[in-house]
Length: 142
Image (cartoon, rainbow, N blue to C red):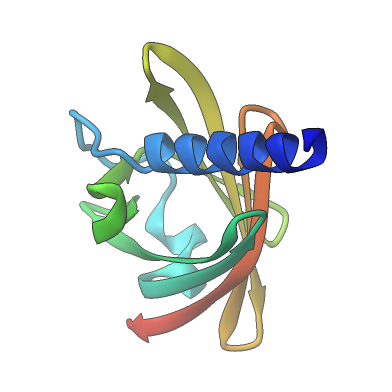
């Protein structure tokens, strides 16, 4: 019985953190990263992830906004898109960071995008490892 309860609590925590991480942001602006450093990542992507509570899909849109990179990520199930303004390069990866909030508790979210042929390998981490998932981004447009 304790095993089932722990699994349910883990699933509930993961679902809550993922939902809160993708809740709509109040402000939208571009990052400071020059678009020339992120050309391979520009476009609209469908990200399919494997999580502790099953498969999950979300949209990722990476655009040129006045010569700087801007991004939004979200899904209809999670209430809309999250604007992402902390976008950097780390070697071959594009790293997206933002703060989520669930029931008054703030936590950091980090998403690493790594080119893999025509796709992206996606690594998603909430709360410095409290919840993590990985998946594949497939280009929809761009």
